[in-house]
Length: 155
Image (tube, rainbow, N blue to C red; front, side, top):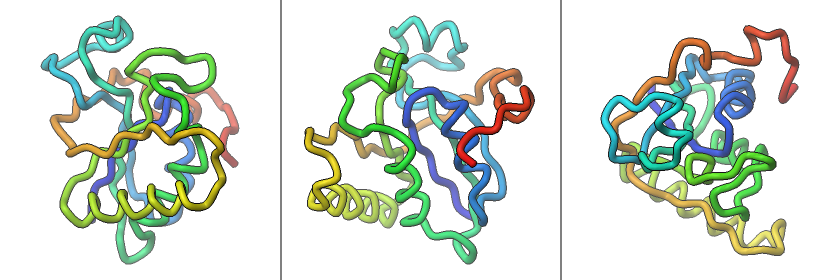
C-alpha cells in the first residue's frame, strides 16, 4: 500500500471522486501544508494556518498507478485558479500535489508538464507540487461527507 495526498478545493467532492476509483482502499479528509498544529476546520477556514483542505488516499499500486490518481486529480478541478475552486475562495482551497517520496515528486512534475503541453487549459496552471507534511485528520462529520448525506457525486 502507498499514500497520495491531493488538494483540489473543498475536500468533500475530492474525496468522493477518489473513493470510487478501483485500487483506492481508504480515504481521509484533513489538513496539511500549514504551520498550525492540530488545526480545526474553523482554524483552517479562517485562512491563517496555511493549511490546505486535502484528501489522504491509501491505494494499492498493483491495482491503480499514481499516474492514474494524478489523471483524476487534474480532471476534477480547475488547476488554473489560484486559491479558489468554484465559489470556495481562500488558500485552503488551493490546487496542490503533496508528494510522499521522490518518485511521486517526479511523476507529479512529469504529469504537470504533460498537462501544460496538452493545451487543455488556456490559462497558466498554478498547482503547487510540494512535499507532504503532517496530516491532520478533519473532524468526523467531514469524513465521507457526501456518502453520509446520500449525495451522488462524481459518478
